[in-house]
Amino acid sequence: MPAPSNTLLIEGSFAELAEEFAQYIDALRTEGSLQTEIAPLLEPIRQQEQSEGEPDLKQRDEVLKKIVAAAAVLNGAPEKEITSSYNLLVHLVHQASNPDVFLPRICAYLAKPITTSPQFGPTLAISILTTIFNTLSADDSSRYHVLLAIVAVIRQSGSGYAFEALKPQLTNQLPTWLSAWELDAEETQKLHLAVADAATAAGDDDLAQSHIVQALQTIPSADASKPAARELGVRALASALRRPAVFDFTPLTASDAVQSLRTSDSVLFELLEIFTSDTLDAYEEFIAANPLASISGGVLSEAGDALQTKMRLLTLTSLAASTPSRSLAYASIASALRVPDSDVEKWVIDTIRAGLVEGKLSQLRSEFLVHRATYRVFGEKQWAEVQGRLMVWRRSLEGVLTVIRSERERFVREVATEQEAAKNGDKSRSGDRRRNQPQASQAREVEVAAE
Image (cartoon, rainbow, N blue to C red; front, side, top):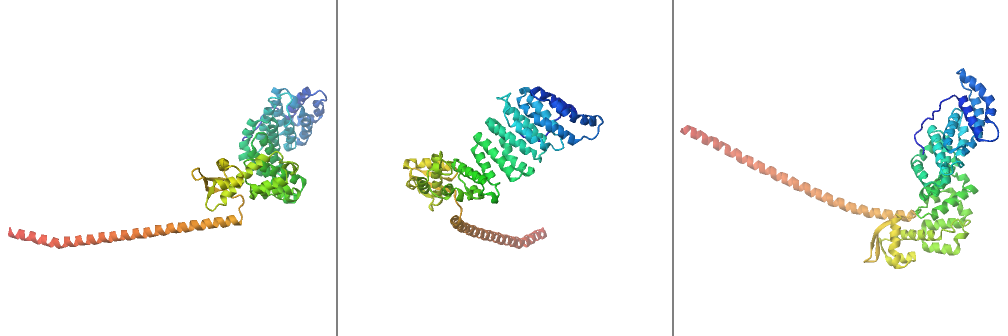
């Protein structure tokens, strides 16, 4: 997987290595002679190298055009020779005037199956691509094409292990890479969708959904109503509704492309609004009038059970958030979710596991004591509720501060009283000592005189 940049070292001049590579290509293919094609182009390069003059990069580029065009046959090379042959090709390309011209085509070759190694081909391709990635500087935009190829190979191979090895880089480094590469919106969207596809193939639905949303965010407002934007908006919305762990639809409703579905796919957008802020009753009424198979080409036709389950969890969340007493009777929950009383605890536990609420079940009282509930929509009503709670907390804190202030004043008074008493006591004892001292001296004097 991508790691810190390094250098690929291969001995030999450009002309020698290009000729060696051409010989190898000719041995792999049955028609044409790459050696014959590049021989006239290599002669002036060889003379420059012998005279140690400045290399003619344009001449090298002409040679590389023919070499890279013929390199597609490398995917049919013997398994043990594939890595070394591609490494030689990459070394030659790095000596071009602009390697970025040739690297995308090499990446495209490696993204295709290696026919001589069906079992280990993907591993070989990923290894070669990783080497290419690490020989490029961190801000080189060619890394974009290499990473796309790596992701494509992982997706095609279905290798969960390879995806898990790449995942930390996607999570920690990808934002930095995208910033350094300065890609346009279309390229950024393409990469996010490629990662989403690979994540889906590897079974990582959460990461897939994250990158689908990021791809959606690359669509400019001016293009929000175009067919491509509409297609991506439908995909992102359908994916969010199907996935069990997605309960926050704010990133979708904030997208211009999704908002444009209000016109192009009004029924699907209505379903989004139900999942955003409504309850199970509204959902069942909607489904009765709009079968899932008829919504936006049937993108949700197989998701009926998943949608109903999610809607029950969201309904319980809304019920918990809107209960002033913070105590929900089992009967109220059963009625709202349309389930038997015996299933209430199961649904409460599932909602807690989803991170939507926190609380304590009381079988003795047949109630759910709500400690915390997630707001599905945060508008004026919710702000008013927060304000009310803050005022209650403020009054409580003011009461606590009053008690603390009173106790502090009482303590200060007691300390002052004790200090005053101690001071007066010291003065009294000091006066007694002064009155007794002269008498003692006089007594001693009398005694001395008597002697």
